[in-house]
Image (cartoon, rainbow, N blue to C red; front, side, top):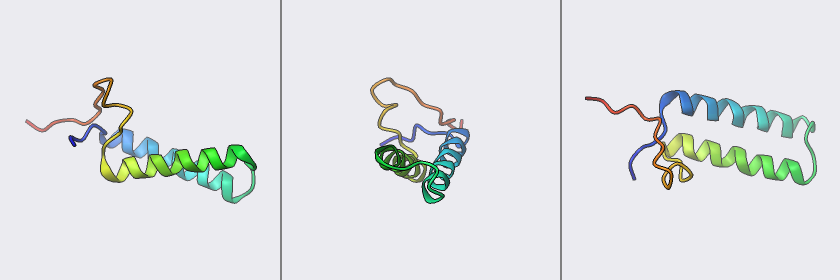
Amino acid sequence: MKRNIGTTDKIIRLIIAVIVAGLYFTNVVTGTASIGLMVLAGVFLLTVFISVCPFYIPFGISTHIKKA
């Protein structure tokens, strides 16, 4: 798969995942919402590490800057 996530996109996703994890572990968010948010945070972390967002593919979106 071609990379479609740029550096800025990765940083934003990582920050959101850390914030959501912090809210979960401090019990600010509980119940079903906490489970959904932790799944979302896990997806964000996975996409940061593999540099591919499956949601971007059907729409042809790419924030990855190709080197010349």
